[in-house]
Amino acid sequence: MSSKPIQLKKYINLFDFRQKVAYKTEILSGITVAIALIPEAVAFALIAGLSPLTGLYAAFVMGLITSILGGRPGMISGATGAVAVVIVSLAISHGPEYIFATVVLAGILQVTAGVLRLGKLMRLVPHPVIFGFVNGLAIIIFMSQLAQFKDNNGDWLTGSSLTIFLGLVVLTMLIIWGLPKLTKVIPSSLMAILTISGIVIGFGIDTKTVGDIASIQGGFPPFHIPNVPFNLETLVLIFPYAAIVAGVGLIESLLTLNIVDEITETRGRGNKEAVAQGAANILSGFFSGMGGCAMIGQSLINVSNGARARLSGIVAAVGLLTFVMFGAGLIEQLPMAALTGLMIMVAIGTFEWASLKTFNRMPKSDIFVMIVVTLVTVFLHNLALAVIIGVIIAALVFAWDSAQRIRARKYTDEKGIKHYEIYGPLFFGSVTVFNEKFNVLNDPEEIIIDFKESRVVDMSAIEALNKMTERYEKVGKKVHLRHLSADCQKLLKNADKIIDVNVLEDPSYKVMSDL
Image (cartoon, rainbow, N blue to C red; front, side):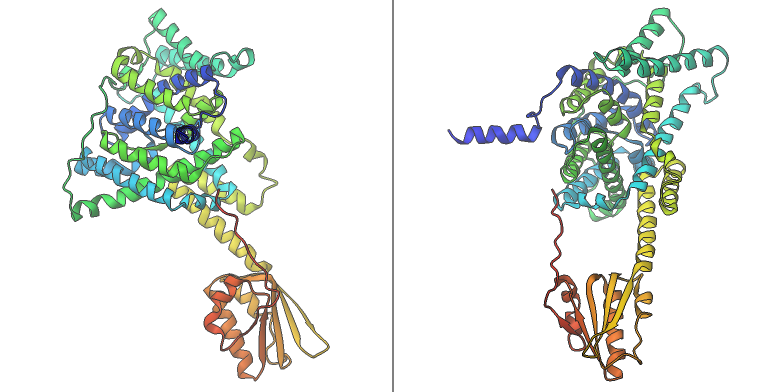
């Protein structure tokens, strides 16, 4: 009998229903997100060379599983352009069955990353990279809406068609901007969609609708095992795509998690989110979906509507499937102008306008990193590559700056022993400057190198110490190293015939555990 309450508590903790939930806000926001998901899921599926239902099924499965199991309540996942760009060549060459297998394998890789707690690697992404990523993504979201200003032949709208479409877009944006100043009873984005739809349908206005993009009529996602040969040749073919999909998905999801954390002033769980994303992709592959990851645009719509719990994401996923199964005819009448205005407002809200004000205050290297990440994101549409490039540049800048900071305080004590007190980390970048601090020929018979304010970091530092001690040994002089941490001593254990290490008063370094 006593085990039941414990099991129930675990169940409640898992789904995070302990927190106070604003049910009306969550449900209305979920419906809004569901409507906004439809054209994006269809568009991303077409980009990947797949049927529209493949994107819609992915949006349903990804949204539902991550909303229930994910590490960030309120965050929305679904079919994304980042994944579509990766798999399009495989879809064209081998067809959808290989895509389903690739998505399943990508999910397995993501679950593995979460189990191994690799989500902590997001700590290595500096803030300028996040700024650049967010700004680039905002520009992409805005630019992607420009396609809605073209007709079915790809020509720009002109005359009355352009005037009507533009007027409806502007009216949508005004409602989203102005309604919260009057009331927050209903999400402004949902009210904008309903208002514009009412105007278009009520007055019979001829303008582009969701149905003009593609039909969304379908049934429940069919379960089937991907119809591909289960052999090494297939694995070799799909593994590179799966690895990229897994990496892109984790990077975009964890960055979105960090952004939502900042907006809501709460903290999500990166490793739990990685496992949830992986599980969702595995099920997406088995339920005829193209896979996906977190969607920053939809997540911001959800959060800006006031949603903070898992319920909104569940409602969005279930609502999307309901529209596909039972309400396709109604949803296909929704004017694209309303959804375009909504996404433009998302782009405006996504852009970090505050980053423009910091240009004269931030270090030039940070500004450079932010601009590079933004440009790579915008022009290459490769979010993972943009983040990786930004991290590499930031790391190189940090290494260069750290290399310039290494210093040595020198003095000779009453016993005639010369002391070198080292300040700053000793690593590959600072080895040259470190070597310049010593005067081997003119130093006394015994010297002490004190690392109380420094640290031996890598093999380049070990090699530098070995060469330094060899130079002193050749001229018959003795070297002592003091105040080395335990990990530094471990690195130096193979050099103990040359180096006399003083382990007394060595500091203890502790690393904060991952929560």
